[in-house]
Length: 230
Image (cartoon, rainbow, N blue to C red; front, side):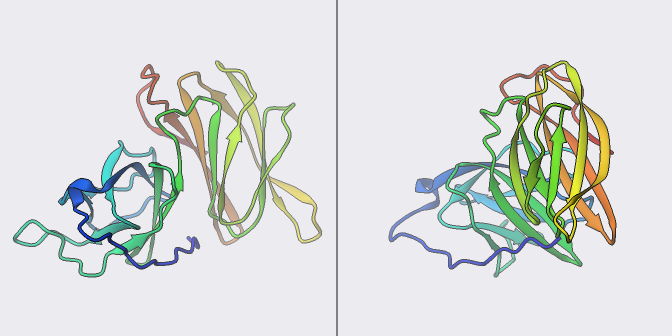
């Protein structure tokens, strides 16, 4: 994965305590199936374990927000505190509702936090995450206009296909001469209680597109959780 995260200095206001700190709510998602080390964040001075599933975003996690999110590696010490003296510092969007993306580069985890209002999203609020180094475009529904997605970026999509049906999907890559070449086509269901979350990855010249049915939190009726991979 090639997302670049710039470490920021961790700032604390004088006299602030963990119990007084602003809170964030986030879910986690691995950009590919990987073995992550033990990872921890702090919630009111207590370490909270986090994991990174690839088939579905995790359940919501609450954490302190004294500055960039601190993510600690390795097991806890004999006092129940993270041993990691140099935690990863992840810059956060202004929103308090976040999707935390994770990936492994060798034995080192990487993270990127993006705004994702999962508590208020609707079934037509889709998200496309392009981890590749090339621009992509996606068309969902025969009458919809293709939506461009820059390399190494994410893009919100507003789906117009009606619920309870399916939509033809075409994903294309931009060529050197500016033209577009179709690299993927499928037919994805449009649920009334789930939104689509799409992760694009590339290995060599091969592209892989993972389509995940993301449960809408305020509409609990659903099929068993899990992602569909094409």
